[in-house]
Amino acid sequence: MSISPAKLRRHSPYPSPIRAPGRPKVDVPAAIEDLLRLLPCETYPSGAMAPVRHWPPAETHLTGTDPRFPFLIRQRGQVRSLRVPPVVLLHQLYDLGDDLTHIDRAVDDLCTRGLLTKLRLGRTEAHQLALIKTRDYHLLLARARERCPEARDVLLRYAEFRRNHPTVGVVMTRSDLSERGGFSPADVEHLVGAGVALDIDADTIQWTILEGGDYLHQIHRGRRDLLGWVRAAAGGEVAESFILAKSARDLTFGRRYYIHDLVGSGALQRASAPGGALLRLPK
Image (cartoon, rainbow, N blue to C red; front, top):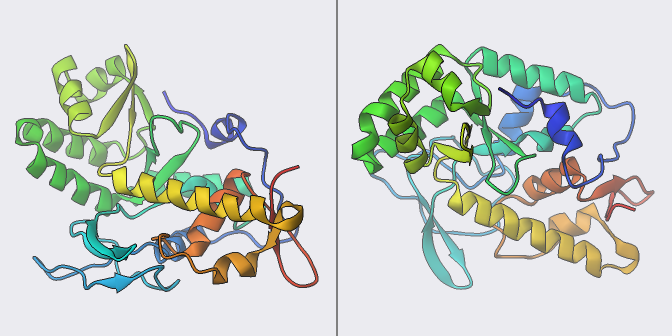
């Protein structure tokens, strides 16, 4: 069983985003790369740690999408390690073009070819889908095997199952998983315990982001801060250039990552103005 992107949009708590007409169709692979460049995630030699950086990062900071190593951030004067899986949200792509059907089809094509994997963002946000490059997803599965040795064999079988069934939906029934992959109820419990899947009900699971805690914390922080800036502005709208230039050292991701998230989901609307684009709350 799978949930179509159109149905997920209908269940979104936000209204459909307003977009300027006439924009060209989105080059989805290039758009995903551009969004990933807004995440503070780099590839380092084996065993190396990222240098301490001051945030927010530059908008073109990304040099790779290898999730195996943490990086260090400085927030409120403290340095700490943070691990963020290299994911983008499906609705972020909706902010980049007008033809949402084209975007959905392009994403589905990348999934069918085994280049992209769809996952659920979190238990409380069923309408939001995360996209991760399949090779990065398998790196996260390898880390899960190291972290959960008791589930190692099941995770190996699951990785092979994903390779053989690239079009597996975000939602599956336990009976379907048993028929297609030979996974027993105990195997499914191992997948849930390793963070690969979430229990939805007695016979339904959803695949979710591995090691997504830091990511969810940072995306929620950014949403809260940006929405707060717009609410505090006169008339409930603010220039997009103001958001991009505003100093906020606690925001870890590139500012545009949050803007595409909020506008693509409909939590904010973008309006044209002589002085540049405005971001405002939905009417």
